[in-house]
Image (cartoon, rainbow over all chains, first blue to last red; front, side):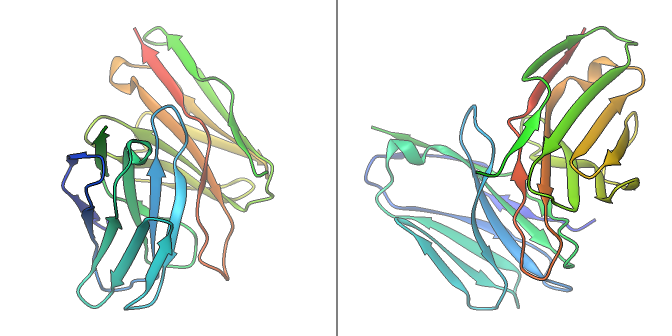
Length: 112
Length: 114
């Protein structure tokens, strides 16, 4: 089993705060790293997929970085808004078969 | 707009009943997955199918079986439901290579076994 760990488990911030979470994964046999956002009462939706060491991706106020050598990825949210409240999942692939191992997620709550 | 649909959003069954959860995708994806999600435990893979009639056990297959007779449809079967199978069940699908393919998820089925 490929262990993917996320921290913290939950996070409460004020509107306007910037925040970040961590995903760690085994660095051997790495193929791809995904970030998903899962809002309450909705389906998880893909945010980013990253494959190369040093990759950085950005979508609006959300960005992510990848270090495949040490096996971690960071997700950053700049100026958090209440609509950013969700569970953020990371998932690691060790082959191109499309099968991912998910972390337990970080649940972010942004208070107005 | 790509879509993964699940047959029910909420389901209540009794212990010992046979339960079918259906998932359909319209994206011609090769891969389909069944996960369960419990508080604090993230998404745990129950079964994975990479082609019609092909399946692979995930991390927690005990008490479950699956069926994939058509490419677009993947069914999860609880042969004899038990209370510890009360959970949120999510279906997903994805393409196979060459790009790094995300999974597309259905809305989930919240199953309660009494």
